[in-house]
Image (cartoon, protein in one colour):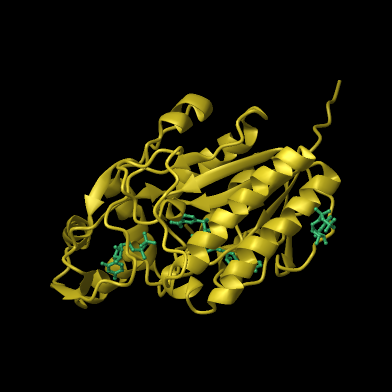
Length: 320
Ligand code: NAD
Ligand code: UDP
Ligand code: UDP
């Protein structure tokens, strides 16, 4: 007897962005119908060009700050510029995207009874005084600084998720994503991994902000996508927030040296002024992700950097 599987209809907002495009690919490979919604502020059609033509993939140009009426089973809400120079370009729009975007997507989830996952961020911890960061830490965030449009926007979105859950029984998943990198990062978005690789490949100076002693923990994008999918598939009682990231912690100076070594670059390191409110250290405690999602990252920094370097070496539009 022949069996017909019923495909899930999955909406990915911000699906033409860096993480979103990898997620769309993965969801299609898993046999889902994928609706990618994006206003192309930081995402590009190049990121998903190879998916266009797949009958189970649909692309819609739409800004999530406006209502959206579609019928779906699951929503991954990733729409939001993520790099400081992008989210500070139009900070009011950044807050609107996080807050109005969350309200619209939660309203949609409520109406169609969809499960909804929010791409939150380690930035909700601000410049943390607790290290490594655990989900029960409330954070140390400046409400009026240059990062606030992003940090407070994402914090308010988390509040909305939990209030829709308590008030309307919407099935929510809040994922706090730590620094993620890999192919399809925007080459000019100013984020540290893409900046250093692009600079090293050009033989240009590697720009370390401050003295480079600040730390970050870098997660390869394939590991992140696996975590997001597992989070969506977890039991309804797993609402989060759950930290998702790679606990391997490096100083920015260590990262610069690694990139120079792996690219065999002749670039030298120069120091520049540290941007406002730049967190001093950041490392996820992933105990909850291990327990609830049976997930931990499998790609180490060097292996991930090699793949990312290969992508940038081959040119921006190369398949990843
Ligand atoms: P990205 O900028 O590549 O992707 C964001 C996507 O959202 C882009 O395609 C952009 O065009 C789209 N977008 C922005 N505003 C929109 C709007 N109003 N309506 C519709 N689409 C809109 O960034 P990314 O790194 O892929 O991040 C994806 C998500 O993950 C973001 O929500 C970000 O806050 C979160 N996140 C990322 C990281 C990271 O290190 N990459 C860390 C923490 C959280
Ligand atoms: N919304 C949407 N798509 C839907 C349902 C709702 O975009 O399928 C929007 C709706 O326009 C509203 C928001 O989501 O602005 C919140 O919806 P909710 O039903 O929670 O609130 P209300 O409409 O009562 O303000
Ligand atoms: N950074 C740097 N040189 C660069 C870009 C960034 O030293 O060319 C530093 C930045 O000051 C921060 C860290 O690298 O301390 C990570 O920056 P990114 O913008 O990638 O992410 P976030 O600060 O949001 O974690």
